[in-house]
Image (cartoon, rainbow, N blue to C red; front, side):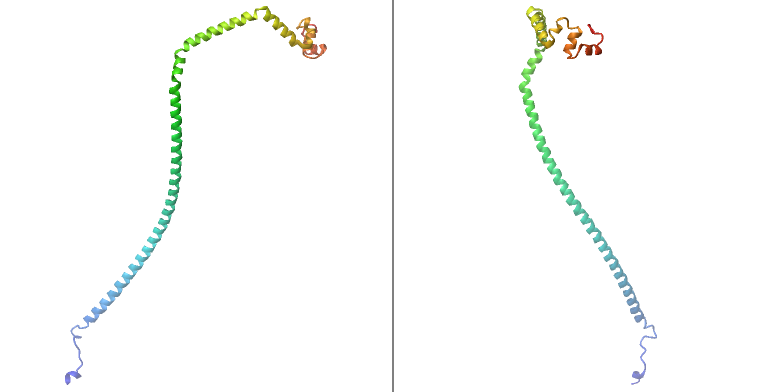
Length: 192
């Protein structure tokens, strides 16, 4: 038939190529959207990896800090236990001292209440003892004993010092030196 021999034109004259250009447009836009989506996904992947790396680093630092804080906490708890023991011992010592003060308080109160009387009695005793000493020193027996003790203290020089203890012979004998040697050092001595 003649229709087979005619070239079919379809809608090409009436703008039938619009469907092809529309498909090309859709393909072009789809490829562009796919590229944008791929680029966005790549950027998001890089951002995710950077974020994960930062978070892993921060996690490591926080783990390290946590370990240090746990160690510090253990040390502080140990110090706290020691301080509690010290406090308990100190409180026990304080209690013992307070009990002791309560125990000795009556004696202290007695001393405080009778202090003036005790001071008066001490002054009277001191005066009586000083009087007794002066009375004893005035007795002939005491004076003889002191003279004998003094003579004993002169030792080998007591015969030489019988002339007088201010004389150069006595002083030289007591100093265990010669009379001329003593006079050289003490020219104002009697007998030089």
